[in-house]
Image (cartoon, rainbow, N blue to C red; front, side, top):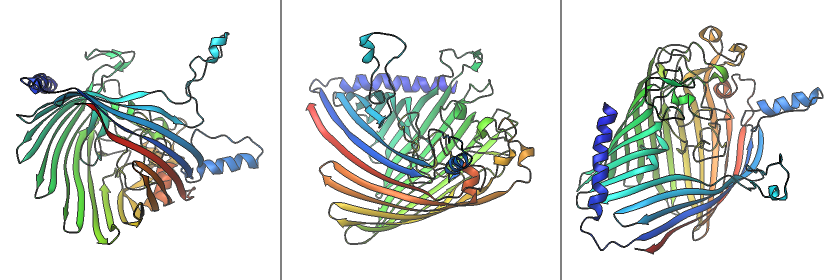
Length: 520
């Protein structure tokens, strides 16, 4: 019933706003806006499994065996590229928006090789490609009624809240906003996160063994400027009706691995407050989130690869984030600090489960190694930080308490340097699960009994140098070193036997362009 009411209200507004946007206005001229960028990244990533992969290679060589590794290891040197284009075309108050990625690829990997199972000269050129396929992330209509301050967006678009701690994705959505003269904007949204199966039915039934029902998301937020400060309270409700087959879209519907011992999310409610502003020399941004939810799937073990949490059906959690910077001197010299705290699960085999987010793509940034990660299902193809689907560390502030000190300065009118140090601990202790799995890789309450636990995640030092070479052209050198504690070893490998320093060196060349308009 809630979904029908929301869709009816949003549908009425969606039908009205575009019609009203052009009504009586015959002076609007069509236009085409173009913007985008090309980015090249070269990586040297080392010990992202804290030495486990490298040790396995050494052990195999020592006994005369041929070493084997997965696609990602403790020694990865590679390069990626991306050309992104953003286009808007239509009229001033009603236009279409599309954003696509072209020639996105990992250098040296051809994902569309020619056929080898048929003869013929033309086969030399069949399916031949030198990079990953073109894909379009956004495609939606943006309509505004300027007289009444109404705006509506319909289609695949960015769906996000706050600082991207609890929600950050490209989703199929309807988002309607109402701007008030002086007090701010009210924004309402609905997003279809999953159709349930590769089909259209919404019956309380299964197709090929899977529950066909949908997973949907409802959003409400208010944005206002108060004495120069952004005040942004928001509310999100997520509901997955398709968990009758003992799986849920989060996490079973993802085609990548999250951190171990993740609950099935049958429903979730998130309330948060995002604040940003500056007082004198001090600039501050921050966020606090409270989440509750349910896990209606009664897991008895973690399952293969330790994917799942075992809990009593209740989920709860929180995030706290504060980032402050002080103008400390000439040459854009700034000193700052970050405090981040996210709730954790004190027992992955019993009690309430933990929830810190609904769904994110990993674009929230704190540091280079431990947390930084872009998920591969929508926008990224790079393993990046320890929070990636390979190493399966935490992202954002999941079960993490951290304190960071940082500083930046313009060492030249075109060159900025940044350095940071971050101390991290687990909010709740992490268990050593590697020796507690059964023959199928499952962890149960019995197998975790009496095993070691720890909360010392580690310490990280990072640096970044950005050179503005010319208009739109940047050359960035960045990297860091993460010194793991026992808790990091337990999370990534299930054991503290491997504690090599994880380090990364990375260079980025990026050229961006905007402001190209035709017509209008």
